[in-house]
Image 1 (cartoon, rainbow, N blue to C red):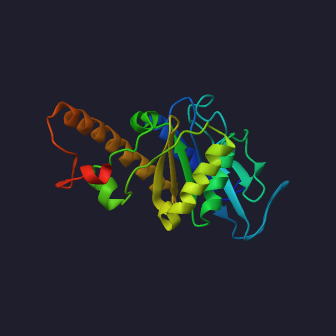
Image 2: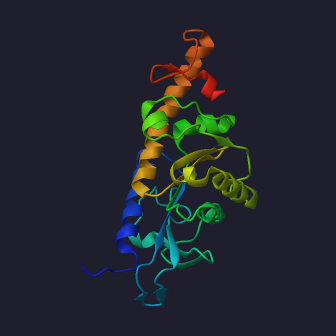
Image 3: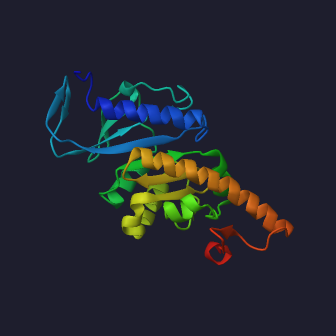
Length: 240
């Protein structure tokens, strides 16, 4: 089947993931945005859009993805951005002001392929506290090996300060940034990954972890349990 616009399969897939992110309450009408890095495999011309072989682009959800469309996007609404210049070259809609945070993440490690930001409901509890999230479930602590779910210090949304902080924090992680989630103080979560669907899985499982950790924290405060537990072990020391 002939494609109707550049990077059509990838943009359709991202539109589907964005719709499910909203439907599953992994973000809210206040926002959320996702981008995927694509290195062009060939020269492509679609009307006035020219794609250069070997050049890096990102496809990205448009601003007001949640407020205006409730996550119900068509593939053609997913934007195409030249990663080197930050300029939008295709797509129906406008760039989010958080493009600087996405570019900062990609510049931190060239192997990062996905930047996934949301206002996930359960994780927002920990982000709003400005506190690291206890990592207590097997899937997040062992299978995904996410380590400590760190909350970055507060920086204003869409600011250069936030973009710089994300960049520096990812650089410090090295290749651990290829599968990582940060809490953004009072703002939400930021996942960096090498695969869009894996990033979605990280968010889903961290959301379950956030709720369970909240419940363990209440039980610990009430004296009903002595310590955080995970995989049959006391994880309190790791979390402090």
